[in-house]
Image: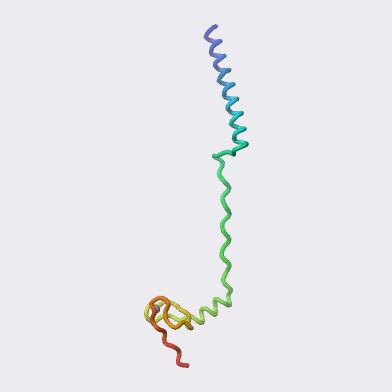
Length: 92
Ligand SMILES: [Zn+2]
């Protein structure tokens, strides 16, 4: 009976240690926070405000294509912003 008593005592001791460990772990997690809990992902940034349709249309109308590099530059620009080629001014 001696061996059986030792086994039972060992089991009770392990159970007590486990319960104590779980209890302290629960308290620790309550105060510190569970490290394995995934943080709430940040909400995605709001999309940039859409460009006003009127401004976009005006920009498209006033944009010309550079004859040298093909870049679209404002018609009012003196020269191309990409290659620096002077733009021919409209005759009218
Ligand atoms: Zn150009």
